[in-house]
Amino acid sequence: MTNTAKNVLVPADDNTFRICFLYVGQGDATLLSIPSTEGRKWMLIDCNVDKKAEGIDLVPLLKDLLDDGLDAFVNTHPHKDHLCGLDCISEEIDIREVWHSGFEPKGDHVGTYEKLIDLIEKVGEENTTVLRGTRSEAEIGYVKYDILSPAEHVSNDIMSGTDDEVNKRIHEHCAVIRFKYGTNEKQVLITGDADWVAWKEHITEYHKERLPSTILSAVHHGSRTFFMEKEDDEPYLTHLDKMNSTYLVVSAPRQSESKHEHPHTVAMNLYKNYFEESNIFHLGENRECVIVDIQEDGAYSIKTDKELAKTYGFKEEKSTSNQNAPTTPYTKTQLDRKPMGGQ
Image (cartoon, rainbow, N blue to C red):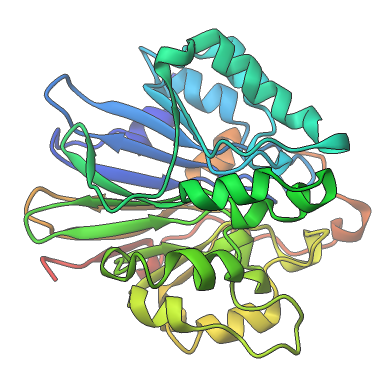
């Protein structure tokens, strides 16, 4: 039987750093395949279950892919669309480490967070990392990374508030991580749902040397909160100026399927001032994943894949409003593979 996960996700070259932005509907899930002296390491950043938007079921995908479990699960922040299905994954897949933002939701918002705590207790404190922004570079395998958020002082300030204040500031307390690889270095910036306040007040100025990134994951599923709170507010744009990114990946279903209307039109219009439209990948639009390969010398390529969603996506769960939405057949296009050389 064909193993689609291994065929699509395991790089042919042992020294390739592969990043796959998985389509999981209204949520995030990014899978990293990291070269190291001990063979390939596997890291999953966030997870979600979205049957109505035909998102990928991560459990069978990971079971097909992994012979020895996940080296690490990373949670950018404990909202449902970044943690949903974690308990099912941890029941079926061995997870050796947990990295998380340290945010502790209050009141009625603790339910999903408890699944993360269960996993932390399972792996043990010695295998758990609370992420804190720092100017110090770190490594996993041959890949280097920078943790840009949340800063220790920001965490202390937020977590000392009332329950309502704490919950409202969760996106100000989101983990942001930049991964780097290659002698002619290329970077991938994972942003979670970090809002414009986090970028303006805590990240952009302090980490401006660490913001340039070849590939940017759009904040909060293409939400306007990366730029502004309300649609008619003046947008904050300094962070994008500093990032100087070439490619944008938006992890969201079609706007008509999103209960939050992600990606927001005002946000996408702002992104289009910084990215060529052909360099913007909206995962839900065509039910596809985006795979980035970075080689030892920094040469890189980006391609789309529909086979993972086709094989592992939930079926027959569309909402009534989307029953007649057009579907896109699997066809190869120029966007399916974009070699970038050593730029």
